[in-house]
Each structure stands twice: as structure tokens, then as C-alpha cells.
Image 1 (tube, rainbow, N blue to C red):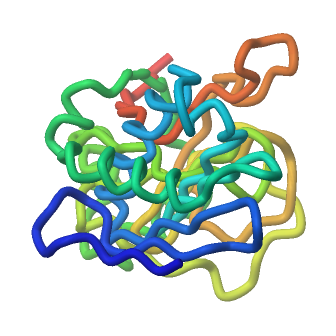
Image 2: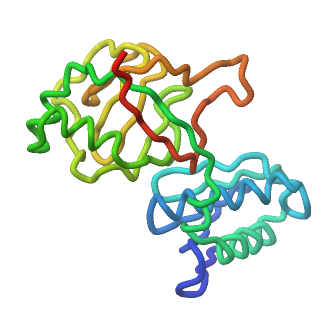
Length: 224
């Protein structure tokens, strides 16, 4: 089963089987992933037809993995995914996204390094990080960690040449096109520009993760 939707229809570019119980949906970019995963999440919540057999939807940088129960009708599910993708636009997904505001103390040890990489002053780095909303693209690395995209393009910076053995929980960081917050102390090679007290992963919360794919994240400076 390989399905290539008609040119120009929606956000899906190709569907590929992943074993007997999953379909990998390829898209053009992260914006398309976010739009498609939001649409598929809504279909999954309906629990109707083929969606009753879907167990998980996992977005990544350029694809969405749709995992079904054993015995699910994958060709029918592929057609349903294609239809959902054809009726989805990036603009609609952004308009319907939930939002969260994160207060940050811009006291990170790499703030000056980021300023040198970008040609900005440290104050301009802060203004750039807070000046545009970010979007949660996908999770990974550790429970509660989310890769945030869509910020000011001037903040694209390389990872550190030598990762730290211990990055404090709550560290706000940059690497490549992404921003992120370390949910717990761990090794890491991202550039640290600030800290936050926000709890990103709480097993007593439903869901435990504060961030979900597609969510809009706005950073504000905490001057206290």
C-alpha cells in the first residue's frame, strides 16, 4: 500500500505501511505535520468507523505515524487519512490551536554566546525570543520535552560543541530552528538562554505533559 494523494490537495504527500498495524504519513514540513495531526486527533476522538481502531497518533518533524490495533483495515484507514488531510489547512490548524504563556528569566549562561552567533545584543535576543509565538511541533528526548518551532528566524543557532553533563530543570534553550525547555535535569547540548518555573511534566495532571503538538507557546520576560 502506497498512496500518493492528488497534487495540491491538503497536507498529505504520501502514505506508507509501517508493519501490519501502522501507517506513516509523509508531509512537506512541520506546519503540515501540525495541521494533519490536529485533524487526525479530532477524528480519533470520534471513535467512529476506522478511527475506532486507531490507538495512537505520533507527529514527527516531517511525518505523522498512525498506529492501529491488530486486524484494523489499513487500506480503509489510509483512505480516511487522505480524506482528513485533503480537508485540512495549516491556517485552520493555527487558528484553532490552544495557547499557553511561559514566563522566563533570561539569565541563561549561553545568552551572550547566542548574541554573538546571531549578531544581536543580549537584549535583542530576549526581544526576539518573546516577540513571536512558537508552536509545539513534536515531543521527544525526555517526558515533557517539546520541540518548539516558528520563532524569530534570527535565533537559529548551532548546538554547543561540547554538551553539558547536567542541564538544570526549567532551562530554556535554543538549537537549530528549535526552542525548548528541559523538563528535568539531564545532559544536553542546547544553548541555554533562560529559566522558568513552569512544571512541564506532572504525572498527577491529565495529560501529564503541559505541551501538546500544535499548541501555540508565547514566552514573556519575568523581571522579578
